[in-house]
Length: 200
Image 1 (cartoon, rainbow, N blue to C red):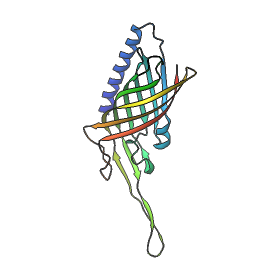
Image 2: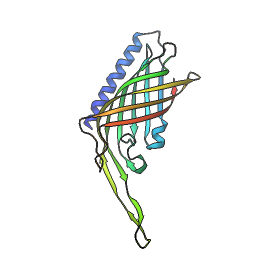
Image 3: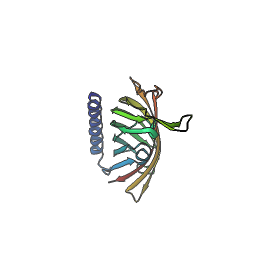
Image 4: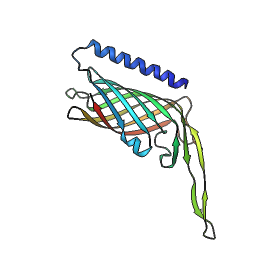
């Protein structure tokens, strides 16, 4: 809980700085964007909402929250339930000089997560008599912690309102590395996104 409070304070500071920057530049339209990662919803069952504040010079600050989070896509096929919640902050830099906050982009990011994941790693087999044997192997592990990383992506804008972006990102755990029953999660967490958004 302490980690979430610290990250919330950092996110609040980032949003305040972003709003001050926009206020200083009156020529910039005050535009915002809300997005969700559809790939996470389909693969891991995670629900994600991001808020992006567009800044001058094709830059933006993004803050997001993910409920029912997982550690990358490890164990996504065996997931029973997740109580994990993560908060993420990123600073996006768009490469295009002519496109208004779309096209190719790069971002450094920080993430804080708390909660557990329950996985069903049971199996079915047959004994020598041909009888079905099932073995329940449900276990829970903690995926909480801090991580830092970066990502690359491309965003398309339709009718100046709707956005679609594809991205890939990689994070490295700072401090404790989450471990499942087999201890093979590792410190590096990859993730991909197919994000749909609305700009206003």
